Image (tube, rainbow, N blue to C red; front, top):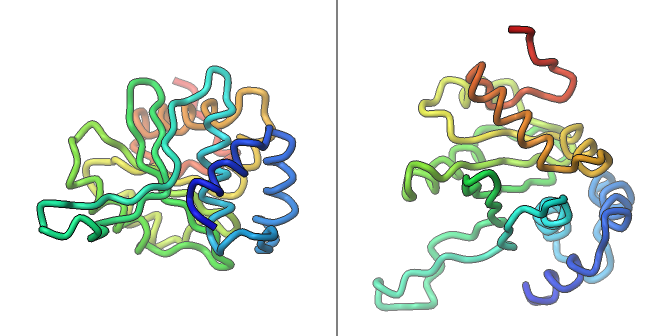
Length: 193
């Protein structure tokens, strides 16, 4: 299936349909008919932000090509999408793995961010098992903090809550600013100040 076809399929889904895709396929690691591996989760994350009220401005998965190399078909990088919210542009990396994510996707996204203006931020989404402790420790030590991590609980709450994904992003962003915390799993309450 072509990217445009994935985009059309996911854009036809409302929030209940996204929740069903999440519960019946992504969490279980099962592919919906006609979808390639990894694609359902990539598109679900972007669509969830697009369904928020007000909707975030989104760009579905895309490739970056560089015609300056003399071969315009050369793909420099593939991004799982981008979101613009609160005046900030966020590059998205989405992974649906059976095990916790290690530092590799975080470092790859960090490298992509370093080639862009400093105001661009990043988010890494893990569908099922979150992140390994070494990965979260490494990210906490990197400066400047430009990447937020989202796990299964963050996604579930974003899909199920009235405030949607943007409310979860707002909370994560606040914790990143106040406490220099790039992960802040759900249930980690904000401290009283």
